[in-house]
Image (cartoon, rainbow, N blue to C red; front, side, top):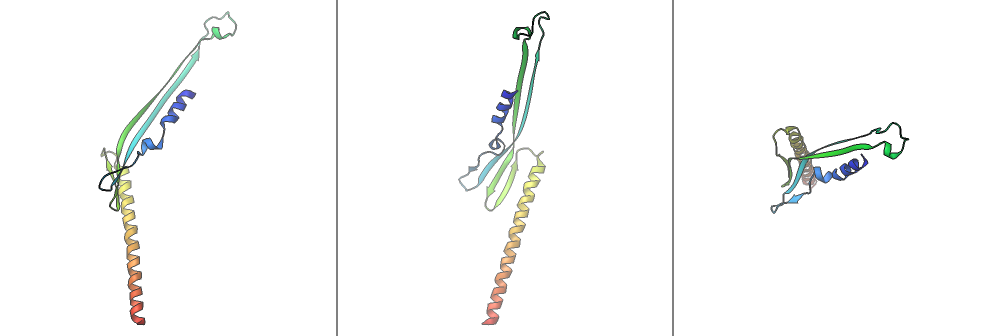
Length: 134
């Protein structure tokens, strides 16, 4: 069981779920996103082969085994560039994740617009104050 858990620990890595970013020639950054599923099983038993012998190692043979499985499925790609972030999904069944990225994108756009409007208002007020004092 320790060997199985150690092997699983070696397989689990954040870079497996969120892949290494790749930059395209036009400046976009593409990050692959995957779904990973792990499973493992382990078991064993001891058999009393001869009831008349003492408790020596030969009198109790051991049988056991373990196994593990990994499934990696691509979910989509995060594309960042040109002042926007988009999630391009591989399967349309993952709409919740896509909606989350769309919401985050719209939220950042709204924040940027609010900041832009505030800075424009501040500039306009400064210009009006400068004109009245001149």
